[in-house]
Length: 140
Ligand code: HEM
Image 1: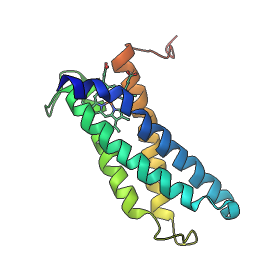
Image 2 (image 1 turned 60 degrees about the vertical axis):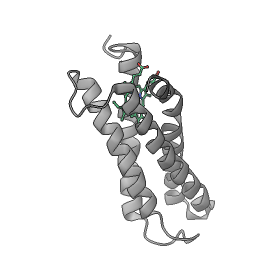
Image 3 (image 1 turned 45 degrees about the horizontal axis):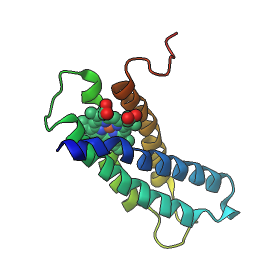
């Protein structure tokens, strides 16, 4: 249990980096479809979603197996992270089939943008948990 929980901080980088990079690549594809980034987006979405499931799985070992937490921060981090893992799987299912980049990508794009936002929040909350309140010094 302790070992798997200790691996959580190492694995959180994968969904954060890969899914944010997928959002960037999809944004560039939106602006210029001839960039040919469709395959890149597919790869980053698959690896990012897989990383999200792994990070969330290990997170439950780090935070303990309970449904409610005394700390609001840990509770939000727990359920936002679990939601990101599930959302990542739905995102994979929304990937346009094959190499066809002209297929409608509306729902895929909306979900990817939502997950990217939730990941930024998740990373911030994780930093608060690991390094303490206002770890970025934003509150002055
Ligand atoms: C996609 C899912 C998740 C992401 C991206 C994520 C991200 C993070 C990040 C960036 C940190 C800070 C790591 C560090 O700087 O050392 C962290 C810490 C933490 N996370 Fe998550 N997390 C996820 C899911 C979860 C879940 C489902 C739980 C369950 C409770 C959880 C529990 C924790 C705990 C307890 C810490 C503090 C660990 C420590 O102090 O060493 N995480 N997380």
